[in-house]
Length: 314
Image (cartoon, rainbow, N blue to C red; front, side):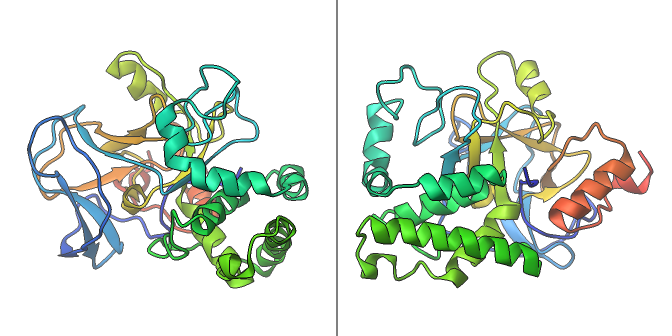
């Protein structure tokens, strides 16, 4: 798969002075206490948008959770998962794990079920592509009125080569044809232009997270799962989050993202985090040597990592 996790940006020092706070309309939850949210998204003079702690955060604390803006099961998931939240299905009689998931997604599920996806699915599977499935899901959400066509515009897009764009055009044609043949009204798919498809896919390419469920267990068990390789075969799907995509990378991160039973992302502190400190996650397998990490980050995300660990040759 193509690498996935967050924004295309230059990595820099762990501490970066914020210039101002962004005002976004996303929602997230923190710990069970009534303390104010412990983070803010700020614009910096070196790495663009970044996430900073607004108060001390102890090791192991749940910083916040995040619902995906869009998610989709992996075609190679190790077991059947919920259409909506990617949780393991309790039985195969329904594509949903619960009445709640059915209620939340029924409208765009119905849109998706109207179309014949054989050609589109074969195109993706024959080329080993996962991210076009997310574009398809988002398009169904927009058609049903659940999402806006510009819902991912706030995310940074990847740089695309002419060859990438050419391949994307084929996927666009198959996607639009599927909706057209399903007799979806022209006005409902007016947003679905080649430019929109390529723009969304460019954002998904470097902002999608690979969902690997950790399940239950102790915090130590969950912690060890956080450093699994992004190439592991246990992924149940992919998802895009807004807030989580603002976290910058560090090869020695102070926070990590885990998924326990479904696609709800949980940000936890790996060590004590000071007020004003930038929160960073690791986009890749941190156990690789420096040269391998830097090559993977450059090829997958477009930046040369200059974190403290890389600069010291670790």
